[in-house]
Image (cartoon, rainbow, N blue to C red):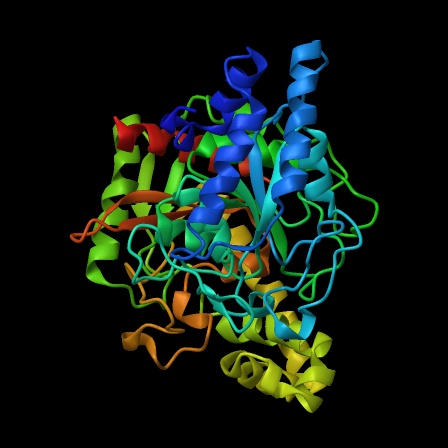
Length: 459
C-alpha cells in the first residue's frame, strides 16, 4: 500500500475507490494499523474496532466490485469522539464513572456517515465529559499533539484532532459545546467547523443540550464540507433540529468569494492574546482585501466577556447529570472538573435565569454586528501552544478551565456557524488558527471564505 494514503483527502480517496484504483480494505487496514502503532505516543483512541472495521471495508469492496451504487463517503475511514454514541462500542465520555458503558444506538451523525459508506475504525479520546479544552482524562490519560509530543492537541475533541493531524483518517466526528472542535483544530493545524445550532442533530440528548454540536474535523475544508453535508439534516429525535433542506456545503468550497464585508477583531473586546497570534491572524484577515473585500477592524464585538453566561449553562448541565457522582464518589472524577461542577451547581435559580436572559441579549448583539458585516474573523485561541498535562496556560491562571480560550464559547451561546482554519505558523513553526464566524444559518459563507483562504495560503 502506498504511503501517500496517509495524506490523501477524503474526496480523493472516495474517487479512487470508486475507480477501483484503491482498495477499501487496504485503506482501512492502513488506518487501523497506524491507529494502533501511534497509541503509545499519541494516545488518540479509547477504542479501536479492528475486526468490525475490516468487515465493513470488505463489504465496501464487494459493493465496488459488483458495481453497486456507492455513497459519497464510500470506503473512507473515520473515527468518532467518545462523547458520541456508537452502537455496541464503549461509550465512556472519558470518565471512569462510565468505564463499562456501551452505546445502545448509533447517533444520527454516525448512522448517516456509515450509510454513506464511511468505515468506522474507533472512538477517540476526550477530556472528561468534554469539560476541559485540553487532551487528558482520568480514564484514558494524556493525548498528545503529533506536531510536538510535549504539547496538547487541545480538546475536548483531542483524539479526533490528533488522529486527523497524524494522518490516521482524513476526517473525524467530534463535538463542540464551547470550542471543542475549533480549539484542537487550531492547535493541530486542521480545519474544524461548528455548523449552526441544530444543523447536525444531537442525540442521545447532550448534557449541554442548548450548547452542544456534533462537528466534522478534517485536514482540508472540502473534506470537512463533505462530511458536514452527509451528517446534516432534520432528525425527529432532536427538538432543535433544523427542518429545512441541507445547503450545498460541498459546492460552497468552489463558490466565488464576492465582495464581502468582513469584521476583524483581535480581542472581541476582552481577550488578551499573545502578540504573535494577533500578527499571524491579522495578516491572514488582510488577505481578503486582495480579492476586493472590505476588511475593518472592530475593537469591541461584545459589551462584556460572556464567560459567566457560558459557564453557568455548560457546567450546570454537566453537573446536574453527574450530581450523584459529585456527592458520593467525587474521587472518580478529574479534580479540576469536580471543582468547577460543584461551583456551577451552587448557583441559585435566580442567578441562573439572569444568565439565561443575558444570553438572549448577547444574541441581539450579534444580530447588530451582522447587519453591518457578512463575516467576523478573530483568533481561535489566545496562545500558540500549551504543554500536555496542563489545564490552563501559565499567563492566564485567573481564568477557569474554559474561559482562558476567550474566543470560541461566545458562539456556542449565539448558535452561529464558526470554524477554525490554519492561518499561518508561529516562529516555532506551530500552527495558529483563525476563527471565521458567519451569520445565523450561513455555513455557506463560512465554508466559501475558509476554502478561499486555504487555497490562498497554500499557493
